[in-house]
Image (tube, rainbow, N blue to C red; front, side, top):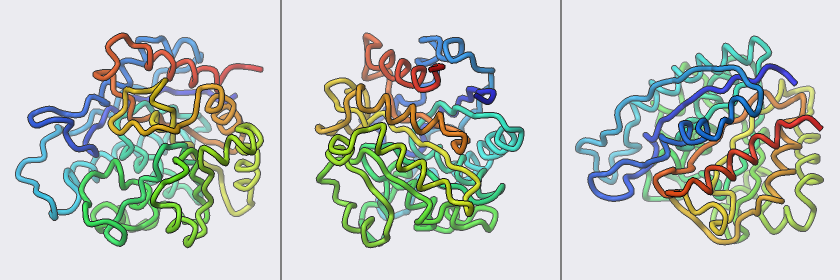
Amino acid sequence: MRNIFVLDAPSNLGLRPPAPGTVPGCYKLAGALREQRIVQRIGAFEGGVVVPPRYDRGAWEEGDGVFHAPEIARYTRTLADRVERHVRAGDFPLVLGGDCSIQLGASLALRRIGRYGLVSVDGSADFRHAGNSGRIGAAGGEELAIATGRGQDDLTGLEGLRPYLRDEDVRILGIRDDDEDRAELAELKIPVATVGEIREQGAADLAGGVVRSLESPALDGFWVHLDADVLDPSVMPAVDSPDDGGLLPGELGPLLRTLVRSPRCVGLNVTIYDPDLDPDGTAGALLTDLVVAAFAEV
């Protein structure tokens, strides 16, 4: 394996507040996984922290577009600088979020370098955009749409590199069987495997097929985005939008391992787990165990 560098990206700028006067607690994800000794257990190197701007939606109202857009744009560029440096050096960055908008930092970084794919392991497609929704605002539910060029210019067109990802280079794994975005994604020919389809085919076999599909000479590699809400809330209740029907640990484990062990995989980010919703730390320990096991030597 390449040298793994653990990098904290504790941004919560892409989520709505869980209650008036509060902020999303997913910015504590990195700290919680570090308390589980994730760096030492993986045998990783220290990558430091990319400090996010302050969470403050100010006078934002529905209809104003994506809140925190200038801050997210700035943070995306800063995070991209760090990710780009590691990928160019041949390292494997493991980025601990944060909400899903941090994935934009990786996508921008890789777009600067060449043409890369994305495997999104997520309970939802995060494909909300003006063409399919009237409730645009939270980038954490829109980052895949933004990364593929759908959205406001100040987020989709950074550095003149729109889109950061091509539709045909994206794979979506783990959405619920009744996800409302399935029809649009099928029309766009973006490959999707729902929880039911993963169970039918087998997690490791399906992930192996995904890896092979991304081994095209046209691609320089791929990134993996892991959202904790891909897990069923019976084992991962500590997320902002827990939906029944998710993957179980015995399914996510071999899927994730197959993806990140591929020599074509250039990095992984972990998002959405909220320690504020996990008072005894059980869910955080599980998430850490799954990530550590993905990197374990066979």
